[in-house]
Amino acid sequence: MSHRITLIRGDGIGPEVIESARAVVEATGVNVEWDIQEAGATVAEREGDPLPERVLGSIRSSGTALKGPITTPVGTGFRSVNVALRQELDLFAAIRPSRHFPGVPTRHPGVDLVVIRENTEDLYRGIEFERGTAQTARLRGVLEELAGYRIPEDAGVTVKPISVAGTRRIVRFGLEYAQRNRRKKVTVGHKANIMRFSDGVFLQTALGIAAAEYPDLEVQAMQVDELAMWLAWEPETMSVLLLPNLYGDIVSDLCAGLVGGLGLAPGANIGERYAVFEPVHGSAPDIAGRGVANPLATVLTAVMMLRHLGEGDAARRVEGSVGALLEDGGPLTPDMGGTATTEDVTLALAAGLR
Ligand code: NAD
Image: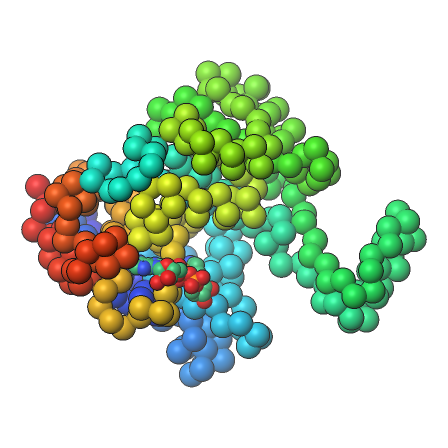
């Protein structure tokens, strides 16, 4: 069976790591028809839009995309392609696994965590009021009238919406994921003691669904600051972490750091109809174009994509090749203490497929 996959190389180190993952996927013999699409700064300069409609159209038609990181230009007025993709395709769930591979130096061998992050609400919804504008002045007036809150004149404001409907779908997604992957414990991170009406909705909804629909799972609630302490102290006691958007973003990078860094952290953004697979790391402009980007995060991202497509055997073979390479100590790129190039790693991974 042939799979049609939208391929977005991205920019910075994106093209380097995406081509590596593509080569490894092709070496498995899985039949893929790649629909190559461009998004980001170059296409924005040419066409005025960093995410042209045809890119979304391609994903709507293929259902699946493999994407490299895309630089978010600061202060140009262009929307972030990454945020826009999640919103346009309603990719409400991010899955970010952090598993320790033998051979990778760490203080915490045995870590096997998965962050399930809500991807569309919370402080990242993009509801912002700029300091000193007329809009913000009106907002300050309304807040004072409604609730007696006095916001300083020189403050900017970001709004944090968390809905029952938005929480229900991520909670069901996360608990289904735990059940399907035979994980017994789910930790719901929150700060509902302080943010009673946003995190409070997340927590109450999560605990309600867990009790009513997933009685066999151990679902524990934990304040996110306490969670941070446990992740530094005994991360091997945690399994699935179910988090609202902002905490999920921060905690998933922390978890990546526990098992060897961003160069090893894969990710997926999933909705009801579409799935976009991308590594957690960004476009790393500091090393772009030098041929030394670590492709392992993107290759492990492709493993998640292969599983999603029902190609479990190919996924196991690629994961096995990554595991063997790490256990043998290389070849590794400089971020992991080696001297190899992206291409050296790619060739070793393809040769290591069993
Ligand atoms: P980054 O992840 O690009 O880089 C952080 C550090 O990690 C850098 O030192 C970099 O060299 C290193 N690094 C990251 N990936 C690596 C890899 N595969 N191999 C070796 N080293 C690697 O984060 P940043 O510098 O904060 O962001 C750069 C740009 O990427 C920004 O414009 C940001 O908005 C964008 N970004 C995009 C995405 C995405 O497309 N999903 C995600 C995060 C950041």
